[in-house]
Length: 227
Image (cartoon, rainbow, N blue to C red; front, side, top):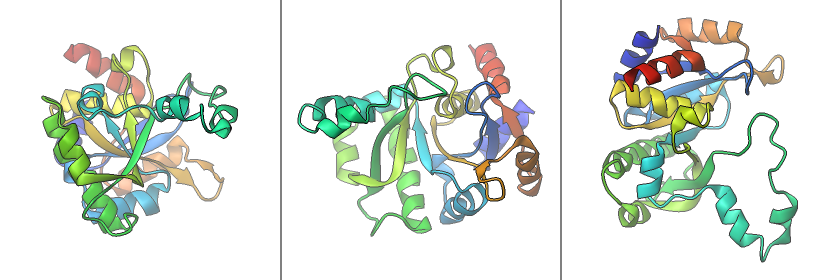
């Protein structure tokens, strides 16, 4: 199953990824950023329905100069008390959030349409490929503006050794696949239950998309084997 997921990700197809029953217990649709087209954004929006984000490997985030959003808040709360009052110290499923800044590509209009978000995500994948090897912060600033409509998620140093969220799992899977570890992800929701979709619905979606549903444990085992 994990081999099928690796091949799917390498070939620009969706993979469904369940983190763990002991964590969020959610399934995300994931796809490598470099392959994202408007139809992929439309599918994430209509089939999944959650927040469309981009997960970055910590090396990429570092070479782009991207902070965690909470790091920005720590500085800003000296002036804006509301940020101190709303500090996220009670996240029920983890110790910290992976959120960094939000962006639009500078060639987008509003940034929210399927075409606009696809452009932003695809270009994030393009610059991430460069950021694996070197600092491209200035180029990032020339090509993207913030705030925007695509949420960047910053994987922790050490990946699955430290955190096993969809951010780290999706990046780890990309690493195993040998592609740029920049992945678009979106939670699958259930309009009937008004909750996150269960595994039963996720399996149906996987069959409809002719792809695979894998677990966080599957990714972790493969990632550790890959060394």
